[in-house]
Image 1 (cartoon, rainbow, N blue to C red):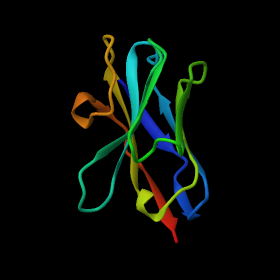
Image 2 (image 1 turned 30 degrees about the vertical axis):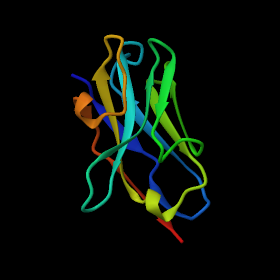
Image 3 (image 1 turned 90 degrees about the vertical axis):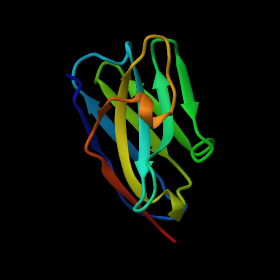
Image 4 (image 1 turned 90 degrees about the horizontal axis):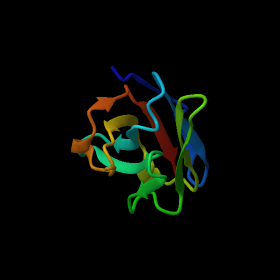
Amino acid sequence: QVQLVESGGGSVQAGGSLRLSCAASGNIFSRYCMGWFRQSPGKKREGVAAIYAGVGTTYYTDSSKGRFTISQDNAQNTLYLQMNSLKPEDTAMYYCAAAWGGGYCSTGVSDFGYWGQGTQVTVSS
């Protein structure tokens, strides 16, 4: 059973930065696609970024490309999302998720079966 616990959310001014962390149970990064997602009230959950250490690839959506960086620390079993140049529209609950890799990774919500409880990010203008 994969367990994920996010932290690092908070309130920042537009243009600021935050780093989200996701602690994962066990050494799963080499075998799992790991992703960050977000959901605002009244909106569908959407992908932000994903990483698959097994093949050394990262994936970003248009909303995160150029501003966010996904990374992981295998020794600490921790996934990160560095978010820079934050905008009010980035306000959402952010979730960490894991999917069995099998050579495939994406930012598609339906591809992920393990989810954390979320951490709130609020960006004020």
